[in-house]
Structures are given as structure tokens and as C-alpha cells.
Length: 326
Image 1 (cartoon, rainbow, N blue to C red):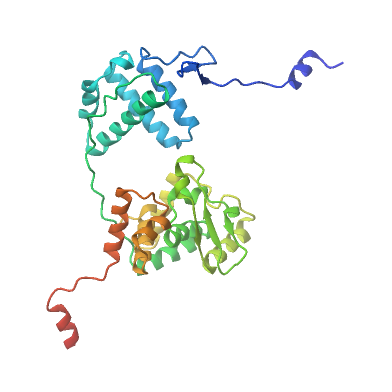
Image 2 (cartoon, rainbow, N blue to C red; image 1 turned 90 degrees about the vertical axis):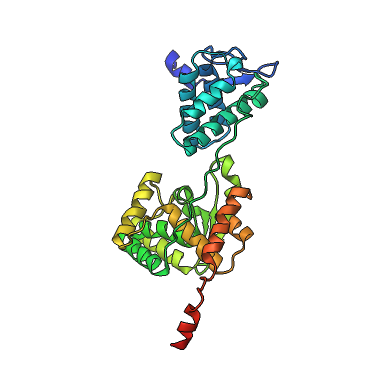
């Protein structure tokens, strides 16, 4: 006869939800006596529910961590005040202590998202104390794409380091994949049916990034790099299974080996891809689609920069005649 312990091990284990909506539409704890979220809840309690909401909504871990950090700093300034008593003065104090415009903008985004949750999702407050504040416009930096000879040297240095490095650099430089897209890419995401024209499918692991999904046409060069990787390291799943910081270091290392003195990051390679596509005639809408960017004002400003960089050079008066005279 089976022992009691053996019998219990065969019983199904039920995991109740961490929280649920009550009949009044408010979030209530269901496990471990979690405090109910009400207008009189402390910011500490509200922060917990907000974090759980972000995690279950599929927000990227970095976003959850950033919001949580900002709200912890906000709580240290506000103190044990109930969330219904937090007002514009508290928000102003929090924003005024920012060290720069980018920090102020991030903090305001955090609080605005937090109060959107409290008002529309949790329904515990009705007034948004952040509504009267506007973030400072942070101008976009002009990208510095790699020139043709620098691109060739970078790919050569990447190939010398190994096929995985070559593959990562190639995907960013020739297809415009972002750092996170390269890290998430699997061999099964690429249609190898036609070795001359493989198709790379860019899928989004997070729901918030679904608009960035797309498929990109590659060429024989990608197939050859992949085959070399398989020959040296065997069958592949994730093609570049490293951390984001490691990919940054990889790009920095390869750029140094290529003798490129300018700052080179994964975003630099993406900028270079966009400018090269613009030179080949890609329109503003096509660049948004190729890069997997949402159609909003800021992203359109970004692609307009690529179009300007791709335009023919301006010729000062006199330079053209001097050239023709030679």
C-alpha cells in the first residue's frame, strides 16, 4: 500500500490567483492576506498592485523595474500618505528633484502610467494629479551611420571573431534588427527553403512589442554564415544567446578590431541600415515598416533624419565648376 506521502504527491496542486477583481470592481488579494487596494491604501500597497498588473500585462522586465524604482523614490518623498491625498504639489516635488530632462520625462511617464492604472483599471481614484504636467521635449540626436568602408571592415572583423559574432553583426547591419530582436531570434524563425533568399521572421515575445513583428528578405550571405555556425557549433536554437550588455560589448570589441574610431553600438548599426535603405529609395512609410516602428510623430521624426542623411550632398557654389574644370 502506498504511503500517505506518496499518495499526497499524486494529488493535483491548485494554485489560486494572487489577486482578483471583487464584485465592486476593485482589486482584492486572494493569497497570503494581501491588502485590498482602496483610496486609503498607502503608496506601498498601490505600488505592489501596479507591479503585479504590469507583470501580468506582459510589460518588459526592464520597464517593470524602471517604474518600480521611480515609484519607490516617489514614496520616499511622499511618505505614508494615502493615495487619495497625493496631489500636484507632491508630483511637482518629485519632478523638480530630477537631475535632467530625461529623468524628469521618465518620472512623469511613470506617474502618468501609474495613475492611469489607479483610475481606469483599479478604479480607486478619480483625479490624476499628473494631468497638469507636461514632459520636456528631448531632441533626437543626429545618428552617425557607418560609411561603406567602415561597414566592410566591421563585417570582416566580425567574421574573423567567429560565425556567431558575424551573424549578430550582419543581422543588425544588413537587416536592421534591434539588439533585443537579435537576442530573441531563433533558427526556427528563419525560412531556409530557398537558400538564396531566406526570410527572417521577427516575432515579439512581449505583447507590447507585437506591432514590431515583420518578415525581412535576406540573401545567400546569411545562409552561408548560418551554415558555418552549424558546422562549428552544431544545431542551433537561439542564434545569439547572450545578454544585452554582452551584445553591446561584442559590437564595441568588433568595432575596435576593425579600426573604427567613432562610437559604435547596436543602435549605430540599425541607423546605418536605415540610411542605406533610404539611399536605395525607401520612403518614410517603408522605413517605419522595415524597422518595426509604430506610426507616431516621434518615430516619423526619426526616419526623416535617415532620409536627410541619405539625400545627395549639397554642393557649395564654385565647387561644381572647379570639379568640371579638372
